[in-house]
Every structure is written in structure tokens, then in C-alpha cells.
Length: 359
Image (cartoon, rainbow, N blue to C red):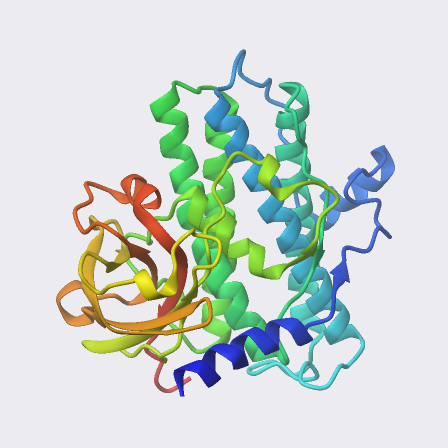
């Protein structure tokens, strides 16, 4: 049964059609008039604050990740707008709205805002002569209707919120100063506004947690790889590790339970037959808590894949909203920054949401 689930998830991603960002508005390199039109659609303009006198190598990597991620978001919302505009089956009606017109207006506003996020990140990279300024890739989106598209938007936006907070911590650790900190903080707020809307459209509480789940650059960059068909540059040129994907095979619920996971460890240098339960854990990031580790059990191998189980300690930690799972070879972590170096596969993205009543 677990093997069939793994194959099913992989097949769904393979069936998704490759998508490239349309350039009808000049993005990603608009001229002055095109930029003004994007800013008008977005409801605001790029910052004109001077960049800081210096930026650390860690900050450069963070801005490369921000540009890479925001281009993915531009592609996603462009594709979603096209599906709604063209009355693609599954995208023809919006719950709680008389028609799709209002949603299209909102999504066009969001798309333009995401384009400005990309342009601002690239401007930082160009100013500091970064060795790589990522260009848009071709993408695949495993969504089949509006509900699944909005659900995916909730998940990746939640991941982004934690990742941008991690970038801010990196700026503080490395002594980076100036407008980049305000700029990224303002993006965190904008992404949070978006996510509350998507969650409400899905009949969820607009804000899922009092302190949103933290994340790391390595987990965010690794998660994005499953949506990539091809890129015009070597993705390994961004100095952030790409980890084997961790699949969550069980639908999580708001209770203590056991979850099933799977991972392809062919790139880890580990032979499946050498994987033992002892010393391996599922480590969860949730809210702003220190990482929570649970030992794995019931390890099975087939080809380069392994499947296993681990407890999901919901009740004692109130793991509402997004939690991020990693298969680790340690269980003692001071904070999220320590987890990637001891990770074999990640991230497994887990969403637990109680539905609103009477809506």
C-alpha cells in the first residue's frame, strides 16, 4: 500500500505540464513603462532606499533563494490566472463569490506584487555583483482545480514566511544592515496578508498559529525542486544544499497519531539495506519551538526507496497549521539552524487545519 502511494504522488507530478512565465508585461526585465504598469497593478513601487555598503555571502545566497522562490510564485499565479480566465474545468467557480471576476482581480494584484519581489531581489544581487542572478525556470504544478491550487498556495506561502524569517536571522548573525532588512520584513507582512486570504477561501482560520513555523533555506530550496522542470542555470550554483525529498504518505489530523513517510535515498550515498531504525528520527519544526524528534519504526525498503513510520505528537505541541518534517540522524537540536546538517531527507510538509463552522 505504501509503495502504491509513493508511485501515485510521483506520477501526479510527472503528469503536470511544464509551464514558463509569459513575458507579455516585460517581466522579468521590464522597461520603465512596463515597470510602471506592474507597479500600478501591484499598488505600490519598488523601494528607492540606497542598498547597504556591504552584504555577506550568506545574505547573497538568501537573496538568490528569494529570487528563485518568487519567480516560482510568479509562474504559479500566472498559471492560475490563465486557468481561471480560460474557464478550465475545475477553475470555473469560486466558493463564496458570485463569479471569478473578483478573484482574478486579487490574483493579478498578487502576481504583480510577486514580480516586484523578484525585481527587488535581483537588483540587490546585481548591485553586489553576485556570481548568479537566477532567471526564471520552467515549472510544473500538480493542481487540478481551484481548491487544490489555493491549498498549494497556502502551503508554499507558509513555507516562505518561515524562510524569510530565517533570512532575517541570517542578516542579524552576519552583521548585514540597511534597507534589505526592512525590505524583507515588509515582504513577510505582504505574504502573510496573502495567506490569510487563501486560508479563508478554503474555510480555514485566516491565521493558523500565534508564532508561525520557522524554516531553513535548505528545506525551502529543496521543497522547490519538486516543481522544477528545467532551469537556464545549474541549480547547484546557489550555495544552499538540495536534500532528497521526504514524502508524507498519511493525511495528518488534529490528534496524536502515527504518520507514514517515504524517501528516495539514492543520492545520499546510503544503501537501503543499511538503513536501520536505531539512531534515525523524524524531526519536526513547528511554530517557534525547538525541534521535536521522534524515533522512526517499521522501516521497509524497495529499490532506492525506504518507507517508515513515526509518531506525530500533535496534542502536546498543538501542531496546528504548518509543520515541517525531516529524516535526521540526530535528535538533539538547539534550534532549526542545526537540523539540515544532520538531515537525510526533507522537507515533509504537513498541514493540519480545523475548518471554520457556519461559513
